[in-house]
Length: 370
Image (cartoon, rainbow, N blue to C red):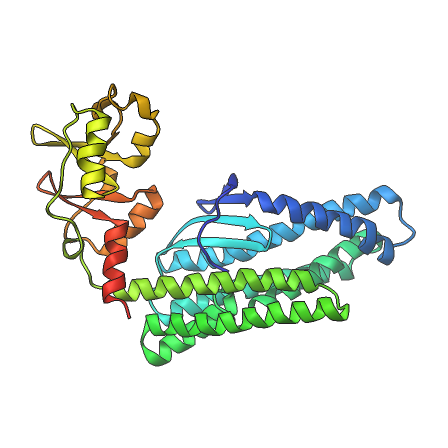
């Protein structure tokens, strides 16, 4: 499954040049899985072994399961790299793993092979662990039996045609190839994904009321899939609306600029309250110095606004926070999201010629969107 990166994760290593991260929610499922395997599964399938061996097997099984999930995501990533796509990171979290791809597959064939690589890798691991099981005994055999079974389940589960799961991406590749319309294919696959997610939610609810197993877990998975499918649908709609639109078509050309020598009190009264914008370029002698936003102003107590100058508060400009007027708006939006900026400078010939803001893009989408 591919998605955006998750916050609250820390890096544990790098494989194939790709940072591997672990989300804090992984610790929850790791602990729960270890406890369930050690206290229930292994004692049931190998009742004659020492108590400590159950916990060793439980910890090993949980670690190898998440290694299997990482292998699944690395398979996606390896194939994506063959199509010159950049993978920013792989994150392991409570529901499995996500590989963050920078950009989209160039054509339906690439989409198909990138998507199918994950389930195929899980089936491969299932076969490897099955062969290992056939040649071992006792606790080791039980460990390999569990890993063979769980990797088979992971492979089959990910083939469910609910976007953004792997099966949903395979479905999108088929629709994309038939209709020759990437945005239509994404929206159609996302709609089907939401339907499947709702089935998980209602089936989980039904299981809870009828005493069936795993009802709450099914509802959580359904909720996660629905949220991911909805986000994919909205992102596709946004990309379609902004397709072919340049920064110069959306940017603010007539800027109100702030002198660094004025006080915050004056900046608030004469700029923020007067014009209602969330930020202003700071200009001195025709030179663009940076941006002053309400966030920086609010970092100072209200009683100090009259004594503090803009020069001590504004965020100095960095060239990575600027775009060309001929750049695609979607690229500018991606930059703002990545850098957590509400506005970035539009420059030409070394000079600031305008600003592009998230609010400005949102207004454009609202007016032009379908």
